Every structure is written in C-alpha cells, then in structure tokens.
Amino acid sequence: MNAADRRIALITGANKGIGLEVARQLGKAGHHILLGARDEARGRAAEKALRDEGIAVRFVAIDLADAASFAAAAADIEAHEGRIDILVNNAGIAVQGDGLPGTTDLDVIRRVFETNFFGTIAVTQALLPLVKKSRAGRIVNVSSSLGSITLNADPNWDYAAVKLIGYNGSKAALNMFTVLLAAELKDSGIKVNAVNPGYTATDLNGNSGHQSIEEGAAETVRMAQIPDDGPTGGFTSTEGVEPW
Image (tube, rainbow, N blue to C red):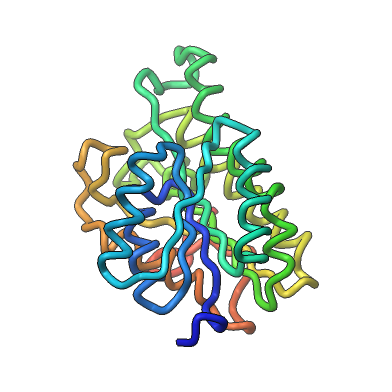
C-alpha cells in the first residue's frame, strides 16, 4: 500500500495487551498506526517493537486522566497526519476495591468512571474534528459484556457473580455513549460501534482470561475496518450481536 493511501488508526492504551495487539493487526493490514499511551517509555518501547515488525507506527502521548494531553495529541496529529480514519478507544482501568454498589467507596467508583467513561468521551471530543476529516471515519469503543444490563440482570449468566459497580457501570455508560454518538454522527459517514473483546488474558484481570490476546483483539480489528454499508450504533463480539 502506498504511504499516501494508508488509513490512519489511533489506538489508546496501545502499549500493551489488547490495545497493542489491535495496533499490530491493523498495522499488518497496512494502516498507519498512532500508538496512544500515557507512559512514554512504555509507549516508545511498543512503538519500536511494532516498527521492528515492519509496521508504520508513531507514538502519541495520551493520558485519559490528563485533559491537557488530549489537546496536545490533537494538535500533534493535525500537524503530522492531518486526520484520523480509525479511532479505537481501548484505554481503560479496573481498580482494587471496586465491588458491590452498597459498600464500594465512591472515590473508587469515580476513579473508574473518570478513565473508562469521562476520559473516553473527552478524548473522543478532542479528536472528533480529525475523524470528521476522514472520508470514512470509524470509532470503536472497547466495552465489555460486564457492561450489558441485560446480562447483569440474568442470574444464570456465566459471570453473574461479577458485580463491580465501578467497572460494570462505566462500561454500561460507555455503551450509551456509543449509541448516542452513532445517532449524532449518522449522516456524517462515521461509524461508531462498541465491542466486547471477550474474557481475554490481560493485566486487567491478572491474566486469568481464557482467550489469547490475538482472539481478544479480533472483533475490534474487524469493526475498525467495516465497509461503508457496515453497521453503526451496535455492540458486537466474535460471537455476534451482544445484548445491551
């Protein structure tokens, strides 16, 4: 693919785990990767690792807890690439102490929401003007089945015992953001979707997930590359449509 024809893909939280694998797979597919990460040393190391694999990649400092980094990233991308074709909102956290709604400290809940929900909205708002410059923009929000109200209400669900008001609640809110943003942008050609990557072995869960990183990245990579007649405002996994 000619360098000028490459689509520009920004992935947040891309220095490790699912984010890094999404960056790798999109890079192997011929996209130019903007590797977003809050830790510069780790981000640069990931950048080098991908570049050594022959991927066109550039590190961009983005910290979902630092609003100033959003404006700086937007200005940096505007100056270098001029647009974003694919925005993958992958960065997220899980916090020790998160748990049942009747007892979990509000500061813990706020901390999770600040990154997983408010941070994602803020970075999307900062970068949306660049996505609007794309001929066919794509926004993928990495959510979780734990954000499904339908599944959380089912006592027979496999993960019914996982009741984390901060994490589950933030992903449910992220799903709502996905639906409303998709509706807002429906006439722009920009497709906005949420993805459940599945229970993947990452640092977030102490590597207890049953899926590999490659499997966990697959649906995000697919949705980042959907054609112009693809869906918007949806919630999917490799198994199909997920319940809200």
